Image 1 (cartoon, rainbow, N blue to C red):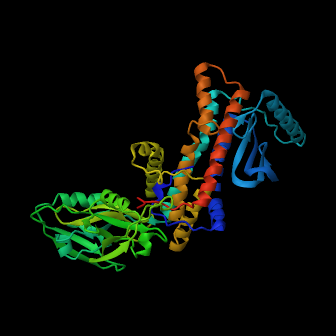
Image 2: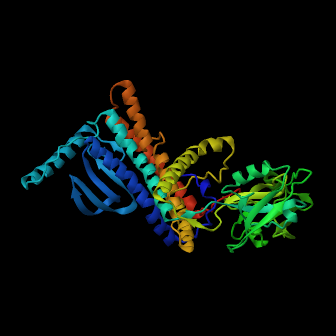
Image 3: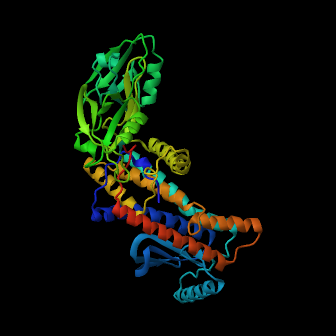
Length: 491
């Protein structure tokens, strides 16, 4: 279950069950196995006996092979995998009597192996490991997810990622930028000969040039040719703001009215639109009523009639558009944003490692901060909607199609890295049945100086797991009835 607000640039998922299944197998299953492989490696390092490493969940389909006393199996329920160490049943401790039965069966098997001249493996249960060893074993799954995200991002960067670029969103009316015919989707390459790669860099240079002309180097359309345009500063500051449409939902009022990505909303009826909040307020007040929406597209203004919905689908707003605030530079009247410029950039190994480390840490921060943003009201309920494996498969299918259409691996690899980080952080939550809940019991054991009763701890984890499965079942139904559409601001 992960918030999905950070994938706002992904296209609306296809309602295709087969594609969902393929996407689940391509994205989520490997990440779960990476998580379990972390537990497996950590168990081996601290000497805990691992009885089984399962791909999928029981019932067992077949035994693939055995290595180091561990049976590697293929199971019928294709929902990731599991590691079963001696003394545990999936996610909870088992009784001492059950542990001894498993130990006897394992040692009997090892005795047969020893007769064949092979190495005899000594047994060690989870309970026999020290608390710090168990802490390491339990947390290793999440750590492997974080490491996996880093490796995925390094590979993605070396294969090629979208090159950073600064794009023009719009030019303010009666501004130097408008007079110079600077157009939406122009790519800004440099200012006064200084290369710019982010909108913030460009804005800082423009803000420092309030009393002198600036020369912009721009690229227009698909041509590689560039042009230089000199802008003279205005004598009065430009206060204009605006709202730009980034996307429209399929079959929404906005789509039916012909609105497109890049359109700038100018007026609603006779009210000028300058802020996202103002647009939202007017639209909500006139839900179910036909209003006149005036927008600007490539310098021309057009007006359409549109009726905001009273009960929009989940994840969408009354108009069915993704919108963002657009602020013009007060001196030159140009609004800028970060983009990719349509180019793919391959990184060296050193650059890829640096990119992978920075981006992984950034993803971890963004996922971990989601609850705080919800409390502060900076993340809406629709943006923070928890999703089931079905919902993740729906999002994966959209990104998989995006990667296939673009002929680029970056979108699906970047998405897999996000899911890997989210999976790791989710598992560390202090909830019974998750790794974080088990770590909590180890901390309690360290503080009280003795372990909890295995049966009692196992019961707590079992109850937690049952509640989690019930929640997942509800989310699965919700994701099937209301397939995920990646929201922006959802108006």
